[in-house]
Image 1 (cartoon, rainbow over the protein chains, first blue to last red):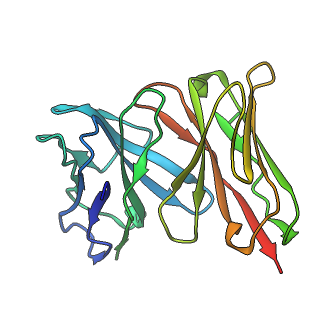
Image 2: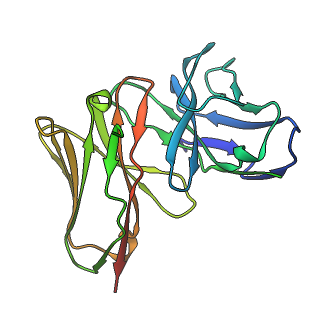
Amino acid sequence: EAQVTQNPRYLITVTGKKLTVTCSQNMNHEYMSWYRQDPGLGLRQIYYSMNVEVTDKGDVPEGYKVSRKEKRNFPLILESPSPNQTSLYFCASSWGGLYGYTFGSGTRLTVV
Amino acid sequence: RKEVEQDPGPFNVPEGATVAFNCTYSNSASQSFFWYRQDCRKEPKLLMSVYSSGNEDGRFTAQLNRASQYISLLIRDSKLSDSATYLCVGRSSASKIIFGSGTRLSIRP
């Protein structure tokens, strides 16, 4: 089944403790992206990648890192999480061009 | 001005009604367009792409008006299962997708 898989689905952590949210897609998509969704603010792009080893900042990249060492994987790294990074995170992938994105099921992160 | 703007709703309509949403966009979000559906606490799912010539998928019809810079979604014979948030989406480049804040739709029996 064609899908984008994120893990974990839920995560509660403490301020400053490094964490990684994994994302993997099995559709051979070139484009991958991370979004966060907050009430009243909608979906905002954190980082995106156009191919292996090609990444760039989205609208809200501060406090996040990404890597794209393989085409299928695009992990999101929070080196020192803070409470304002409490949010619902989505990974998504696409062929690019005129195609829409396929989203993972989301990761609900709480930083206390 | 936001790049993609939608009326947040909520729209509360009876089952069987026809409901229409509009979405306006700025030039920066103007390469291609989509409608997504998002259920509470779930991931957005692609509902349909929007073409200049208009396109239909069952009870759903999407239209794009480039001259006036708006996109519309029409749902006919609405079902209870259509209750969700509908996201208008513009793609300005291969890597940049811009989401509207969403319109909440609630279908009542």
